[in-house]
Figure (cartoon, helix red, strand yellow):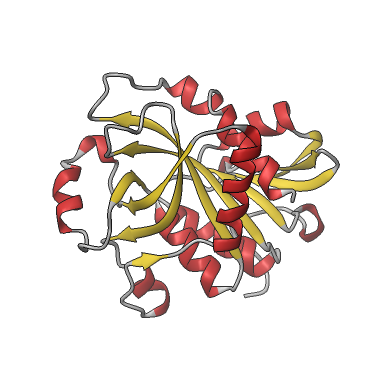
Length: 239
């Protein structure tokens, strides 16, 4: 196969550096509020993508949808067909530690999953995937420059939406060396594919759910109120 099926952008329209939010409307929000000379480059199945400039650096913002099957499709096509070199996923998460407040920032140092994504994709019985150390270090350095606090730790990538299930049972089944601080639904697949293609990927998350807090961010806030995470990702990826 020589052409992407799910991304209808021309090859030259996609930058080698990409931010990936889950929500297509968040991609549009970033393009409209943070990028200069942004243009829509893809919209197949309403999975929106844009390319523009941030502080003079050309980059793309392309949505990936919900769950590992969805991000697996878009990340694969970006790496294979568009020669994307660097991706930062910017998403939301539920958190497992009382010291992590809503809406604190979280950086995944590795991702654990019970899913068989790796087995299905590449016949590997692998359940832990790692981000780029270089990119993670750049994120931490940028967070320090911006005076942003960020929690770093293991995340669990689930096939179900955390608030709808008993996630404590999933945490209890995790390997002993995994100390889960957050749960989400995509980072394992992104990290696994980035390593498969020998590219760089990281995942910054904003805490939106916690069993230790009654605060829950609204749908509108999840779409538009995550500016610290967005700025941190933008400032990092252009370096």
